[in-house]
Length: 244
Image (cartoon, rainbow, N blue to C red; front, top):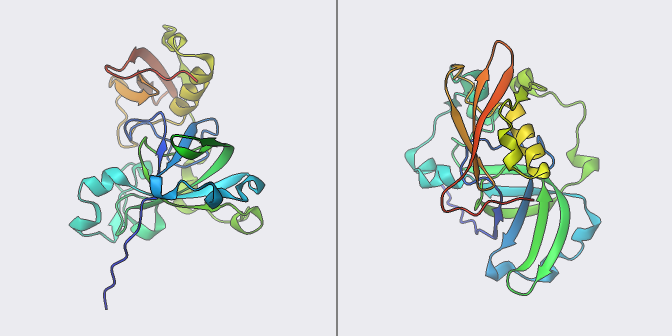
């Protein structure tokens, strides 16, 4: 018998990513990235966070909102997907990946708690680091991270480990990143070194644009030298730039 489950959105997260492009492929890859969990009015009780101060990290369970708006699970599902990290030309079982193209568009992220703030207008806010979520992503649940059971140092990482530690050298020959604050420059360099390009694109002449914190960072990349070149940084129209 087929059962339908109704999930409630309890919060959303605010980050510096207005689009999916450039977001780290996993949580924690860029530890300094900040985000703020903002609860929906129904769940703004400080009592719900009682005891949270005893933990350093959280699990965020969330919805791939862009995938859902695009049809998501309503279009049906495929038992295999083409992970971008494998160049988009190799099929892997969907349950052996973290692809958003799955029966239920649900994501899981491990983040560090930076602080908890109690406000009069928006209720309790959880400020986190290391999130890999787009701005406005719906949060379905929050659970504490337990190192004695959630951490498995000897676990195998399958095909995902094939590119572990891969990084590009980031060059800024025109000094374009100087438009950003020092903290933001560090964050952007870390994001770019992770190579935000789709893995199936390797045209060294192609210019890409990554939006972050109210700016668009335009760049090219040379796979022969493993170097990413920053071309230009421009403030996005109608968006207040965020300088941490």
